[in-house]
Image 1 (spheres, rainbow, N blue to C red):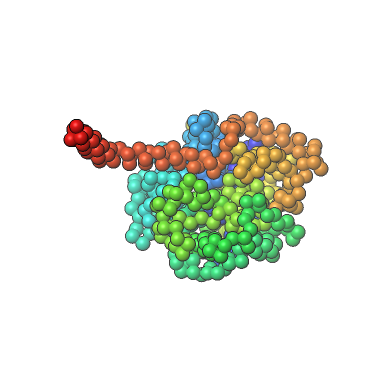
Image 2 (tube, rainbow, N blue to C red; image 1 turned 135 degrees about the vertical axis):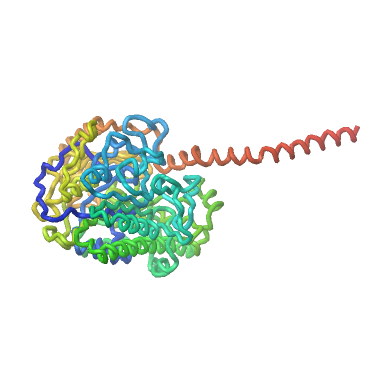
Length: 587
C-alpha cells in the first residue's frame, strides 16, 4: 500500500545470525480478517494455525482494498500509484487509463523483490495469480522470476480451464511465458502447490536458497471447492450472518487479535436474515459453506507444501509469510445485468453452489461477517477492506518470537524490506542496475518480530492511501477515512483504530485540529502520488460492469452477429424473394 514517507531500513533492524533463508510467500485472495482459525474464525485452517504458533500474528496489518494494487506493493515495497496500479484494469475509468500512475499494469520504474534476491543468489519461483500485466514484458519472467506459472487475470474457474465468463473470454494461464496446460484433475489450489513443489525440487541440487511466491485464487469468485470440503460445513451457517458476525467477534477477542471491548457494527448492506425465505436462507448458507470449504482446501495444500519442506530438511530455515490481498468480496455476480449472463453461462441451482460449473459468491451480508468485527469489505477503505491477517514464521530462528501477537500498525509495503533484511540483502534505494527507480517505502518489521521494538512506524508518520476514490490517512493510532458510493457518503471520518478498530466512534467533531491536520497531510500525499479525482458518479461495482460490457460483452455480441450474418442474409433473402413472388401472384 501506501505512502508518503520513503523510510527504509534505517529503523533499528537486528542482525539475524542464520544461513541464507528460503522464503515462501503465501498470498490468499479475498480472505476476511477472521477467516483464519488463529484469528478467531471457525473455518478449519490447521496448517495456517500451526504457522501462527511457530511465528507471529499481526493484528493491525493493512493492504490495499483490491488485489493488483496490493500485489504490486507486496512485490516491490513501493506504493501502488508509483508502481503503476493507481487503479486496476477491471475498475479503472477510461478517462484515467494511461495517466501517470494509472498504467493498470506494473511499470518499469519499480524493482521486484525477486529481481533483488535473484541478483543476490536466490532461485526465484512464482506460482498462481499475478494480475500485474499480461504482455511478455509484464509477466513474472520479465520481473525477476526464474520459473513461473501465472494467471494474469483477477480470477478463473477452479475446476476447468475456463475464465470467469463475466469478465474474460479465456483463462490466461501461462508457464514460463507460454500457454500452460492444466491437468485433467485440475483444482486451482492443488495445482498451484504441485507446481511450487516441482519448481523447488527441480533446483534443489544447485544448493541455492529460494524465494517461492505462492499466489492462490482462493477465495476469489467463483467460490468453488471439492464436495467433501463443502460437506464438512453442512448446516454450519444455518443461523445466518449476524450470528456468525457475533461469534467471530468473540473468537477474535479470545485469539488476542482484537481488544476485549471492540465494537460490532451492522453494515447498511446487511440484509435481515429472518426476513429471507427459507429457500433464500438455504442458498446463502450453502454459498458460505462453499467459501469455508475453499479456504480449508487451500489450507490443506499449504500443509502439503510445509510437509514437503520438512521432509527435505528445509523447513527450519524457511521464512513463511501468509496474508490476504484484501478483505472479503461482496460483489454478487447474480445481481443486476450480470445475473442474466451468469444464468446463461453457469449452473446456478442452489444445490450446485461451489461445485464445477457454478459461479458462487457470498454477497455483501456474509462478506461483512467474514471481516468481523471490522466495518466494510473489499473495495472499501474501511478496516474490513484493508485490515487482513499477516502471519510471519521462521521456525528454526530462535531470535524471532513464537506465538506472539503484534498490535502495532504495519502495512504491505513493509513485507519486501522485511524479507530482504532477513536475507541479509541490502534493498535498492532509488538505483537499480544503472537506472533510477522508485525507492522502497516500507519499514522492516524485524524489530517487531524479535521484540526489539513495539512499533516501526513513528507516531507522527503520515501514511496515505487511495484507490478508486476511497481514501485514508493513517497517523499513529488514528485513521482519517472517506468512502465514495456505494460504500459511503464521501464524508471524511476520524477513528482511533487502536482502541476502536471496528470504526464505531467518529472523532472528527471531538478532535477538529487533528482531523484538519490529517486532511492536509492526505492532500500532500495525493499531490505527491498524482492521485486523480474520480469522474462524477463513479462507483467501483458499476465500473466493473461497464468495463466488462465494453471489453467483453459487446465484442461477443458483435462476433455473434458477424458469425450469424450469412445465415441472417440468407433468411432475409428468402423473405424478400417470397414477398416479391407473393405480390406478383397477387397481381
